View (tube, each protein chain N blue to C red):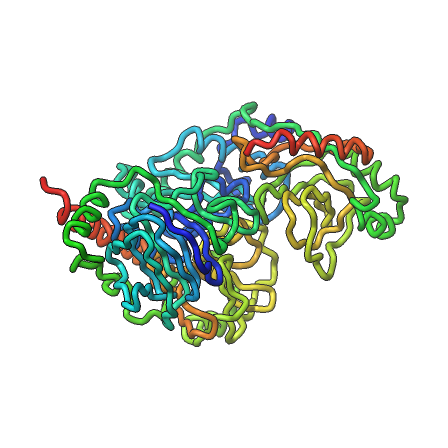
Length: 259
Length: 332
């Protein structure tokens, strides 16, 4: 990521490297599509542009939604229409504003990415599918744990349910397809693998990922200022823990309830 | 003001206009499925549009006024009945303490909103009172209403609400003679929904686009607050590539892998990976939400500019209603 930023120091957010497609998603939102492939380069471009836009909002901007290769911008049409942004319709006003600030030269070092360590109790009852992952990749269970816990992962986006982080950067030796038939109930904290990605279920939901362990951390807590523990652009590592440590941490998490 | 739930009905939750600032953390918008009815119920009691109402689905619900209550309702799922008398919608209604109010089926639609002067008082979660059942937060303890639940209003009510309340008490009547005309805000043909074509429109073959804009579809039984599945002629894609998950929003129409249409609704996920053939014009989304399983739905294309003009016309009409109600009660 650092390497790319050095190289692109003088480039604008909107450049021929990633030609943008801006379209109306609804009367209250537009999407800027930067590309059609997942890459860390694109992630840092979108994260940077998103932060720049939030620091330099147009009148009526409500919020933004970064995804793999796009950024959606939600706004209040009444405020946008009443603003002196040039253009007849809200879409034109917002799109023009985005194009203007897209010409800004990318800053080198303002990306606010956090590094987060997630403790995981692997295997056993907490990781019912770890054997599937091991067999698929001709590994032992210990090797699966070793490989999964030694990687550095990047959060590409939060989606699916509140706080669910889609993470890339997993060692391809762990690549395992998702289940043909999704499980009806996956517990909160379950750590899973789907294809080349890894992720953590923040709450009990149905799901099709291969579950290899569980974290005692609350991935989503409405009592926190930022309810989702992770955000797009964050760097994540996993730390294996034993079951008694898991139980102790779980107790702590729930005693410190913010509700 | 206080009510207790005698019968909760099929699915009753506290909702407001939704939760927008946490979309990037994958927290859905939620909020009222029919935002127009929600807003009109609020306006009828002198509330701001954004205060919390109770969203009832279909009928079979009833409640008791534990104190004197100034309420109003709007929507297509039920009619309110008190003392065997049908209560008019979009009008302030004064219920004496002890009154028992029942919901009887309205064959037209699904959702009915009950507003109270000052709005229903439940805690704000992430700046909204909307209930999101999947994650169990918002509204009343993050869940649907149950028998015996007690709901109270916010004590601070607007000056208009106070005046309405005082006049109804003074005159000893349940409701005044004015009402908001919701009909004038609804499309002539509820089953024809105006749409703006989506970013992935060219992923579909011409025949499929024509089917989408001319054929009848119907609301499937697999429909809920997250989305309405439609049955009808499946669409065929000519571009087979995968769409990387990207932001979606209520009103967006996705086409699944099998070519079926899904209209995303209030509790939809914040991102989706299915191509989007269109989005429903914001002004038509409320009446679309009132369509029931089995109902026919057709789509008619308008431009994004037209959709925006309709949006502003609607907001203008709604602001005139607020002004008109204020002028009835506040002397300048």
